[in-house]
Image 1 (tube, rainbow, N blue to C red):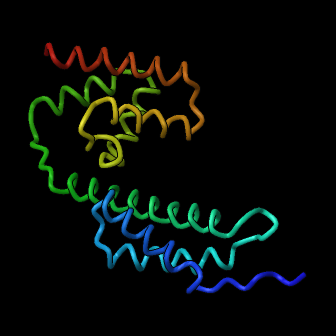
Image 2 (image 1 turned 90 degrees about the vertical axis):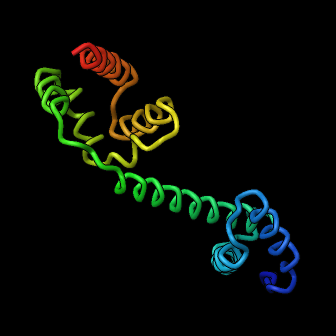
Amino acid sequence: MPEPVIQFDDYEFYLYKLIRSLHKTTGIPVVELRSIVFLAFSESVHQYDPKRGRFVAFFLRFVTGRVDDFIQAEAKALRRDLYNRLEVPDCERCTIIRDLIQNSSSDVKMVCNAIFASPADFLVHNSPKLSRGALFRYLRHEGWTFDKIWSTFRELKGLVGELAFS
């Protein structure tokens, strides 16, 4: 049995409905969403396997995944832009921080180096919990165990306490 031919006209209603919905929930301009959605639709046509289910379900998940990727990339670019605008003064505390890090464990040094190498990924969040979560996910991706991560976080917390009273 030949594979069904997928035509844009048959799914145009779903695409525009999705674009309207995404525009209302994300605030991304319709023109931008339209280009992302249409491009993702054309990619989904080529990647669709009829044996795995209906095309509508496949392309809706595929397209929303592409939009999510776009939103995450935009957010990351915004965080990097915000970080680049920050000015860090050279002060006496900077030398105290360097001394504290030098006298700490290799795990703490590794975490601090990761933060200093890419601060926009870890420090520009609205809450410390989000920053800690981003750092936690990074360390898990690097192969760290839960125990190693939490013991390092406890050590860092102690260092921050020392810094507060110095």
